Length: 261
Image (cartoon, rainbow, N blue to C red; front, side, top):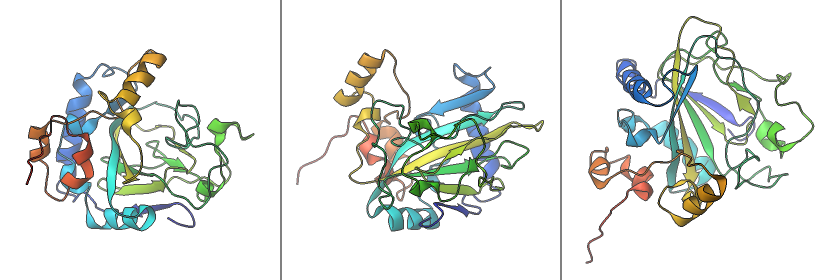
């Protein structure tokens, strides 16, 4: 992760559990407003299904996150991603707050040795060149910029050094969120199903993403639309989470009551 900015963790979701998680994500996708679109993005996934909750605190995954971000860490966003056959490649970019086209972003050139965010991409079906698996540019987290920041590189052109790691169902690709990446062309006859879960250090501000908080509400009012990257969870949903997962999501629980003493 330090030098190239990425790694793959195998079987984070055990092989006999992957289908259950995949079915849960597809069930949410099929009732959403984008169900008929070639790509379905599901923001605030943890508020819509908790089937994947036991795995986002997996020991190896948190080990990498702690090594890069310090302790404690927390989860900033959870997304479901369903990509149908024929869906084409999009643009090379870095993830928020390095996307450089959103209201809040880290100014470029951003520090080369200051990781702030880790994106994890979860394969619930096979990820590879045929299915349009994630393409990454190793080492690009040290470039200080990305194609969405007008760095002189055409965001729609493949980079000479990019690669598409092969992931089996249950594997997780971890990338520094600064890494240049994009989806590939799904030239197969299979729907590709995955998740994106992002990890942040304790000091990282996600108030701009959380509905109900003033920073979010002011930003969305000015923008004229409401993003759904984060969806708060209820105390009842929180109590159903595995104990090892709760600290990662405590910050988005609404209606919490803390007893004194």
